[in-house]
Image (tube, rainbow, N blue to C red; front, side, top):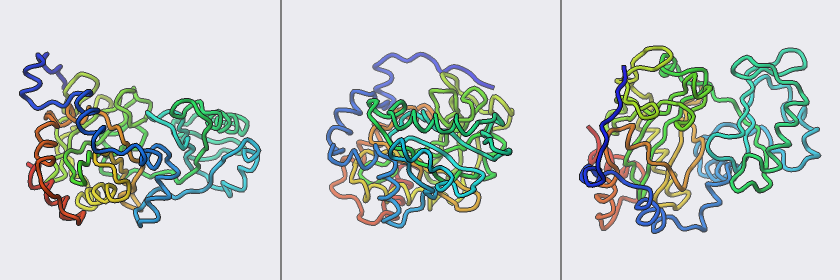
Length: 318
């Protein structure tokens, strides 16, 4: 079941506390995100190194291809592994990611079951090095890492891919969260612009609310028909604490933290975003502006990440 939300006048959106892009850029990203720290989050390799140094769990790094000559060294990097993920270090929007789920003879198998030859794999990596998928089209590196095994909690409302959980953290305090659920239309990717579902999550309980799919509000997954509302996210407090601790690492006041739930390793930080989108408001059917203003008005926020989580749950849960 789904329906389109009613059209809103700008004055009505303001009354609902909807944060617009210009206000986000000028009043929050522009003020609270020092551009010196952007490279730490725009480069996934630097993000991984930063998180690991702080004891924050991320998908295991198998290897990095930095120059064309190293493409021929794949056997050494893969070391016989049957499954892995290749992604550009500075990619954006979920572009340039190849998920290998198994091998069949000399070929590789994608999560969809499509076969990939060795030469096709090498060509894909070469494209990543050329900057085809990177921010600004600049030369890049290719990261080869552990393939996340999705937690079973989302099996009934996810198509093939790995759901991820986006949390907006302001001044170190979690203010909103959503889970992005892959669909057939998104080709198994947890990317809302490509057709994934965004389902809001109550900060206090860690339970999902209704989802948004493109411009439609819905309570069931379009492929399975299973309800997206009422799913309890495991390890919820741990997940929020990972998000809150990320502020201490990056020193970015307005930050998007993407976490995946692995069935064997629990919450893993996937990446950080210094310019997180605004669709999280649609997924939660609420405006961010009033929440941000409450945190902005505080003379001081707690130094301890767990205390900041408790503050966000107290103010914005329920």
